[in-house]
Image 1: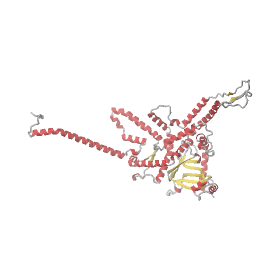
Image 2: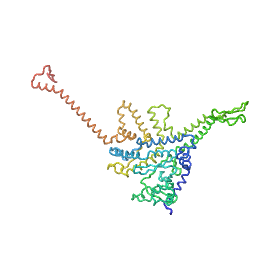
Image 3: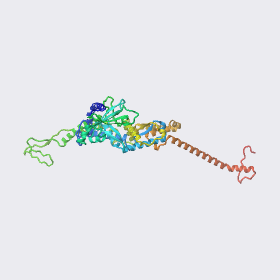
Length: 555
């Protein structure tokens, strides 16, 4: 079978990406050997179940990396608390209660879809790769049963390339699948002769496949079929240079966040905290190995035995009997090696602390020995979360935003989102992050507002007009936005205005009622005097004990 020209061109680019990635592979293998032995299959080939911890004598780096990955999961995408909200680009719609409630219903549908899917287990693997290798790659595909299907790919099988803006837009993935699975996925008519022969010989023998996702330039934008979608998806047989399947995606199906990225590095891969901690990790592992050997020599020291004073063998077991020549003073004595264990332990602890600092452990966990009030704990926690601000910015751009966009569009195309009101057609929607770490970035605004109010309160006792500087409506809107209060428990601007009008009308009615009551009361008190004056005018006698008060000018 002749080679396909398109497959040859794609594989030529793949070989180039393989060459540019070689400089990273040795580094990744060393990190995996010391910090992630379960993923130490990058340049080495190990059998399943084979021992992988032969180089590890201290687990500080392993536990610190696990802690940082778990903390990122809890602070960025914890499903127990909201970690993103949707808002309109139009400020007018953001004040409309109907529009805000539609956004909240959309958010609920998306959260339910995330919970039904395998997002939780796969996203933890993403954070694990990000912390150790500096680059993580997750594939997001549509699933008929669970809406989404997530798959975090091993760093050893992905090859990436960036666009002119530094964003990953091309992913080659080299992986293995059984010949039987390849026939089922691609169809016998599309499978190469090599895979068919392997299937006849041994259906469960793995064969190598290359999957390519990249922008499609030669497409007809007026057509909506698989071969004219913005992103091309092509499966290749690298040995036969043939295309097994060609389709497409409406959005880039991968998210490929990097922890830190240098503009001069080739290959588009990132740097990680594990790379910074690797020298200390190797050093503390070597220290631990030496300290263990020194402790063994102290606990079970070498013995000094006279060359002709004892009958061999020497028995060092409890209750063992050793015979020596009568009349001699020869004894079996331990060899004093003069080991200084405290020095070795002190040096180990220094390296361990450096490892914990590289993985932000001292920023993520409060010290057990400090006695702090609840307010101090909140402030310390917010300060520590703000230290991860630079990392958060890159993760929002390369991970959270494309992830949410991809999932939103999948639900939108499947018509699983609530129908939007007519007045919202053509309105753009923004993503706002409300995870604990994102809120900590904005918590300084609330603290400054509280301090301002605390300062102005005593001043208002001297001059009440000073509070006129504060726009209470603006203050409430800003606090609601920063704290991420759900729209279902807040009123919209129109409802607030209606409530104020009703309150003003009720207050006015109450004032009118009180005025009428006062007028009636005054009229009731004036009635006897008016009756007396009428009686005087008619000449009727005054009631007993009544007096007539002469008016002005009376004689």
